[in-house]
Image (cartoon, rainbow, N blue to C red; front, side, top):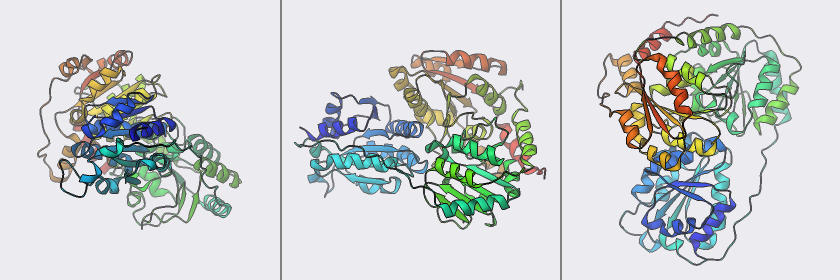
Length: 544
């Protein structure tokens, strides 16, 4: 058989449903093989969009998302999405075409050393030089991508190797188990908890990756320990739970920091340091820390755990809670939660125009069910959504936070609808982020994936303006003009809506969510609230 046929057989063996990408000359053989397979190749309008789709697919399903490009510029366009998956711990397999092997030693049209270029943003990457290694290469790429901590792998495919004859069979998937938590570590952690007066849990991305939300909830409830989630850990504990202190991660001294300032013990569960730097919540490096994760902690002078419980998160939490003989009635978090919720609900009926971010997020929460999905772009909208949108179920809010790459919302929402067709999906984006990958609306229209793109419109890079004004007193280089977004949506054959009054938003959102096609809602946003928030937080006085 042809080498490209064996690659596709291996992909089928791995359970691959979709490959997102753009065709190219160097991958013609692979595309021909895909045309006769059960794997759906989905042509996108930009390689960055393809990589973001693979990225979000990996985060939502726990299975590697696949993206494909040709060599040179196509491969370079994948890089942002691959790097995003690397820092956000999303399993992914990226494949790129390459010049024939006989040209790789010299200057050649569109040739770049892709293995060298992708090395810093992948867990493993390789050039396919012999077709008989295909079963091993594909199996390793998938295995490494999903092993903790997950991330992208990359395979470079020289065009002449794809055409070679080969014999071989896919390798079977051998499941692996994570280690069991160490008994001595459990005993020591239980003693630290018993000795604490005000412990607090930071729940990170790993809780969602390892499907440990139920065990975290049981742990927190039995020991009466409050929980703050990171941006990427939203939904690890239902925000309606009385122990939820909602989200930590805003760089300013937010309300939740009052709890962390008071805490004499911090229990991190599935926490990646890239989510929120320890220096921000442990500035003097003196907090007592229990580290619960699948791997030992990163070395950081502000993050030096007294005990590390390494292994499967669910098992670790279940074992630790059994080792704690009794629960204390820790006080203070209820008062703090009441203050946080009061601020979150302050503008739920506000009729100001342009709309306040708080009002928009309140309507959005009302329109979506517990299991519906919000894919959030990067910008000021991300800060507001991370801080104020209350997640009720795990893995229902996708935020790019490690690389924090703009342009992820629209391709991410498309793939979310592919992965979970029964759930409603909203892409929340600013006008800056939207225009970076808005072309994928055509892909969504072609595939018939209905989701709502909500665009917060302020004609500027609002997050940067927020920081500029706060630091230097004036904005510079952040303003632009926009197309008519309603007309823009309709040019793709999609429904478009413009909000002219706050009371229009909720019924319009519900109408759009019920459509059987993608749609766009343009929402004028009042980003004067950004500086007001900075001012309020600057005057914040902790209640204890």
